[in-house]
Image (cartoon, rainbow, N blue to C red; front, side, top):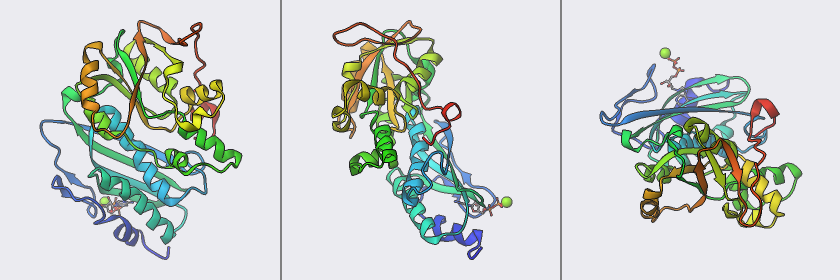
Length: 322
Ligand code: ADP
Ligand code: MG
């Protein structure tokens, strides 16, 4: 290699971004030493992005660095946690300094927004793959678990799910895609402020990475419940509004990669929800209700209830590149 592994670490990752008092020892030793706050739970998540599967081979390095962290922060958001630290395992086919610089810029642009510090990692040679592990904290009373939904609770979703999948399909067709819509695919916003605001207000939560039906299904399965969804009331972006109704609905229900939050709230807490949402940058929409179940039923405003076809993103079943 023209540049050694240690040169890469020093040049692109060490002493970059946020510094935090709770880091006793960061990048440079055999392991990092971190001081977790005694009164809160430590929350930990890891996700790997593989070239050709989770992003196209020609994806921009900035977007890859950004998204590798974003998908992990989204998992912390779905637990109600505040992020603190990350480690980064990077497998590179070659040393491309321009690529590394853009990758680090993308990663730190998001990390710095959330006071997240990179405290370690691993750098190896091989087919491009990026694995990020994140740690954060949450009060035990504020945890948002998948298994805490109950019949009668309202179901909400943030943002406008379906946009990322729509952008991806347009890209694959070779269409020109509106930059705002493309950003929903390449630079999703992890809903951290929302997740933290929901602590003590929402009961269960999940982030929507594989499609609304599939991810809401995780809450319902873990909680032993079902749901009625109101398809006419699903939030819809301008981009989806221009499509035929059933095509838009397919994106809304089964499109992945939006990293919005889907969560449940008991009727007594719904008034409190409006208060904690004030000032947050993302809208939430009530889309249905938890039932005894089992399964998800769609109830149109004017029409007969039906069971929607859930085919959320499954890498092994479909083997595509989502
Ligand atoms: P070891 O061989 O003891 O595991 P390494 O030589 O792999 O150590 O790493 C040296 C230091 O650099 C460690 O502190 C490690 O956490 C850090 N590091 C390695 N790769 C990365 C990376 N891609 N991003 C951030 N830190 C890294
Ligand atoms: Mg070592």
